[in-house]
Image (cartoon, rainbow, N blue to C red; front, top):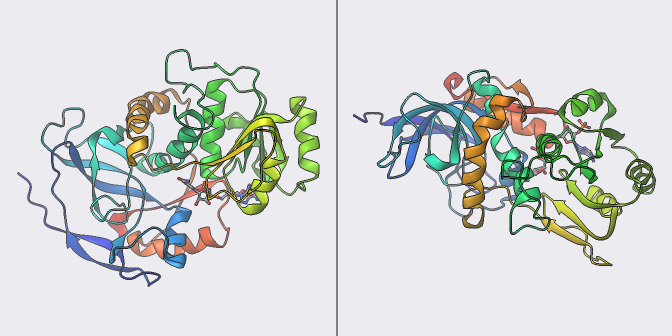
Length: 346
Ligand SMILES: NC(=O)c1ccc[n+]([C@@H]2O[C@H](COP(=O)([O-])OP(=O)(O)OC[C@H]3O[C@@H](n4cnc5c(N)ncnc54)[C@H](OP(=O)(O)O)[C@@H]3O)[C@@H](O)[C@H]2O)c1
């Protein structure tokens, strides 16, 4: 029987207001949904941007948060793939019942994956949005590149000998893009980061790590030295106006630049394109892709082909999110995912 009634949540009461913890009802899972008790919740840069700039959300009070891992508390009608007590990771959504900055979240069962025993909840919470954003960019059948995903028949190692550049390889999204690129066989895999992160990024599969401080003029020469020419595909996991411009400069004619923020390169030539990736699996055009990703994810994590990134736990439960988002906003996080534990909320 389902008896949970109230929980703690982190509300953003008004557009560009201040976060505050308050009570809210625990939602009941409908057909196809599960209710998850969140054990570890990951922080994302988009959350401070929504708070600071008033983006995306029109209905307040709102609850934010996309990444989480936890334990299935209840399942809705028709759910057979998961049961109460299963450890799962999932990507939430900007809808108050389905966001993750609270103790309990509703999620479509097909968009949650069982966590292999060897991974902690903290580690699992680093993966969902980043792997979706990286893989939708590279492999969505209606995307700019349309590479075949490594979990699809014939996709593994398919792009052997094809170069790929990932700008910002130590970001969470970049780290997942490198790992997927390795599974796909891309080679060389060239990335930019602070050089202190070189060994970590090589462990993910980068073949060459270039200093993120190289000038936009110097970068094409370095990439050409490694890849033999300018390249057909660049994934810019940072996508500031500066990195987009530098990344565009690495493209051969007909090349594809994938960006994770709105396109800043306004003029293109010789068939080059710039396309924004939307990593939310709940969007209708991403739903089928997302379900296939979530079917593949337990196996990829179990085999170690996809590894979680480093975790930095922020104390204070839901109350620690404000400080954590400030760290993201002020660029104080390197090659790590910030995670909070809702159970520590006071
Ligand atoms: N479109 C979508 O659906 C979607 C989804 C998720 C994220 N995003 C966006 O993607 C971006 C990355 O998100 P995230 O969570 O992966 O970020 P993150 O991990 O918090 O980013 C921090 C990392 O960025 C690296 N970095 C910063 N500036 C750089 C530069 N100029 N060149 C190379 N590396 C740089 C830093 O590298 P070093 O420490 O090595 O210097 C650091 O490791 C954010 O803007 C986020 O809003 C979009």
